[in-house]
Structure formats: structure tokens, C-alpha cells
Length: 114
Length: 112
Image (cartoon, rainbow over all chains, first blue to last red; front, top):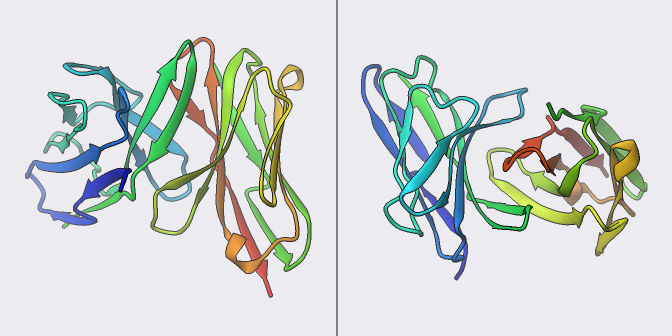
């Protein structure tokens, strides 16, 4: 059963805590991405990785951290430095070749800060 | 800087209508454009991808066209059904960046 999985589906965090969101894919994609979605706004890119052990900041990386130790996994940590972390987080993976970029998305994690 | 706009932001139509969703982008130097569907509280589902060399792509009742020179793509939905109700997003993969740039979406409601 191929695809992208994210866990947990819902996550509650107290202020000052770090939390880690999981993203796993078995599509053999080289590239993986983390986006944040807020009501009434488009998707905003947090971090992305095109190869294992390498990643780049997106448009809103402050307060977030990632790692890419395995091709299949790209966890996102929301740190206490992120001032407004309540949002819907989407992970994607994709194929990149000669400029071509096609992405597929997981089901998302809704993070709420209490 | 690439900007992607989707108009209208929301659309409500009766079942059975054929409809067109619009996506505009400011920089015509693109590799490909991707259309997605998002149901409330869910992830994005890829519908169609059009490469810059293509004019259109079809999947079932969906047809996406691309006019790169004018910076426009349309998603045509034939014989709409209540199950088509969702938010539709387009995303552009530009030559000058290795990221997808997303529009803010069109929220579609198809009522019986």
C-alpha cells in the first residue's frame, strides 16, 4: 500500500514545548517537503529536502527544524521559538528530474497550542 | 517573483453544470503546473499535471488546459456532482525556483 503517512492526525501542545511531526513515504521519492496551511491562506513552504542528509529552508523556516537521515522519513520539529504554531501541517514527497517537479501529499497533522 | 492567483475564491453551482476554474501566474517560464483537490481537514489530492510543452490533460470528467504565454491554466469540470465539492488549488513549478508556488484556491460547492 504505497503512499505518504503523517502522524499523529491531531496534536496538542502546551506553550513552551517542542513537538515532532512524523512524515513517512514509501514511494521512493527523493524530495520531501513540509508546508503549513492557515485558514484563508495558501500553502507556505517550511523546509524541503531533495536528497538524504541535505535540506533547505523554505519561506517560513523560523521556529522549525527538520532532519533527513533516511530517504523515507522527514520529521518536522516545531520548537518553542515558533510563536504561532497552531496550524494544519502537510507533508509532501515528489519526483524531481530536469526541472520537472510533481508532488504528492499526506493527510496532514493538525497542531493546536493550548 | 512568481505569483499565482485563482479566481473566483468561491463558487456555488447546481448539480449538472459544466464549470471552469481559473489559475493565473505572472512568470511564464515554467516547467509544469499541477492541479489539486482538497477536502476539508484533509491533504491535497493530485488531479492533473501539465508539462510546459503540453496544451491540455484529461482525466475522466476533468480537463486542464495550459496557455503558458498568457500565464493561464483552466480546470474544466464536466457535469458537476455534489461529490466534486472541495477546494481546488493550482501550483506552478517555475524555471527560476525548485519549489511549487501555490494559489490560494477556489472553494467549490455543488448543490443537488
